[in-house]
Every structure is written in C-alpha cells, then in structure tokens.
Image 1 (cartoon, helix red, strand yellow):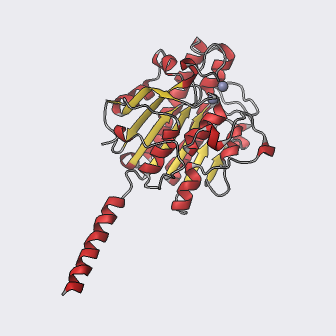
Image 2 (cartoon, rainbow, N blue to C red; image 1 turned 120 degrees about the horizontal axis):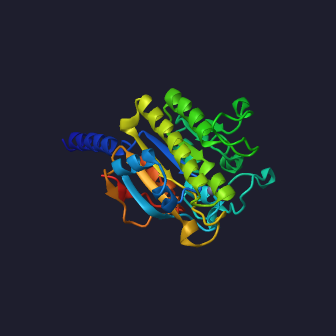
Image 3 (tube, helix red, strand yellow; image 1 turned 45 degrees about the horizontal axis):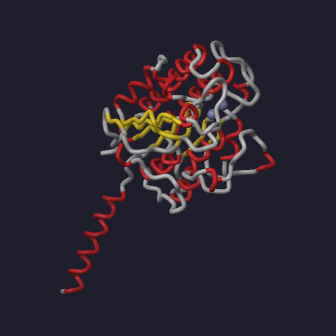
Length: 305
Ligand SMILES: [Zn+2]
Ligand SMILES: [Zn+2]
C-alpha cells in the first residue's frame, strides 16, 4: 500500500518537473548594433528597432563594461562575465592570443544540448577569439561572396563585412536551420562613427541601413515560422563620442537593451539596472541552460511575464 502510494507520488513529481522544465523560448537571437548609442538612435530613422522596442521590453540606459570597446564588451555580452574574468582586453584580431578562456553562451548551450543548432554571423573578424572549438555550427565571416562590394554598401574593408551582408547570410541560415541560438553583429554604425563622428549625419544614415538589416533578420524569424517561440535580444557593445569610444563616460558606456518575443512584456520599460553581461544570462535562462555560478550577469527577468 505504502509502496504504490510512493510510486504514484514519484510519477506525479516527474510529470510536474517535465512541465516546469520546458524552456521559456525555443530560439534566442542576440543582435548587436556595434556602436549603437541610444541618443543617436533616438534621432535616427530606425522604424524596425523602434517598433520592436514598442512591442517588447526596453531600456535605453543599459551599460556596457569598461573598457567600452568592441571585443572586450562583446566578450562580456556573450560570456556573462566582466573583463576581469574573461581577460579579453585587446581589440584586434590577434591569432597568437588564442581563444577566450571562459565558456561562451554557445559552448554552454552545446554542453547542455549537443544537438542544439547555433551560429555566429559577424561583421568583424576579431570575433574569432570567441569561436571555441565545437561551440558553433556556423561562424560566418568572409567567404567568396565577400570579395566584392555590394551596391549601396560601404567599400569592403579587409577585416569588416557590411551589416546588409551579415543580415543576408544570417537570414538565409535562420530560415533553413531554425537555430536555437544565434548571434548577429552589425558593424556599420561603429564604422561610420569612427569616420564621421558619433551623431553625424553619416552615422545616422548607417543606423538607417542597419535598421533595414535588422528588419531582414526579424522577417527571417517570421518566415521560418518560429516567431511565436523566439526571443530577440537587441543591444550594442558601446556608444561613442567625437570619433571614438572606450572611456568610462556615459556617452561611451550607455547602450540599448531590447527584448522582444515569446513571454516578453509588451510596451514595457525596464527600470532594473541592465549590464551587457546580463544578455548572456538571459539567453541561457530562456533556453533552460543552467547559468554558471561564476556569471556576473543575471537574467533580466523583469522584462518577461
Ligand atoms: Zn564596437
Ligand atoms: Zn569602434
């Protein structure tokens, strides 16, 4: 009698756990607008980003880490820890320095679910430092289609790929593979900032072009039929001032942080303090991958129902 009661209890408990363990989202897309300073975005034509923010949860006052430069801050975004732990303090592709020494969201996902499909689509070659062995199915930078400039995009630079091209390749792959986790990096806004200044008309034009690239990725998620089970997290690695960035000042440190999709509160302003390493924690939390104790980042739970 006791025994059969116990078994019933165990079965019930197992069923309940199964129900609880369902991930909050089946697909997470992390999109980074390199150098996307909220104050400049506010003054620019960016209908897609503004619509996504209106349909989702947003803070235009999130923070990046110091130093507010591309590779260290994207490393925090994708590893969940600050520079003191990840130790990527340089900003150029330097093969001899090897790979990041802490796990990334991709390697953590693969450890939890080896069959999960994931990929990185980046506009700067230095992201190779984050490409841990077997951590991503696709690391997309370069390839034969990158050898010639595309009409309407800036001239191809050896170590950069325009946002529109990143979007084109990411979109095709999303539609075909319906990934569990993808990172999509748009470089144009930063490039325009260094060339013409943060807040310059040229940079605002780059924001407009990048917004179209974002639309393409958003559309791909819808076309793939996974919009209802997906979350997009859109942010940036830093802002900027004059023609540079890297200082511990609000112009450089303040970044946007937008969540959209399954379970995200609609038309919600996030008032909690959000730091770029919270992006990694939020992505893992959504996918039901354990968030390591070493993480500095915490899931931005207030943005979700
Ligand atoms: Zn950057
Ligand atoms: Zn830059």
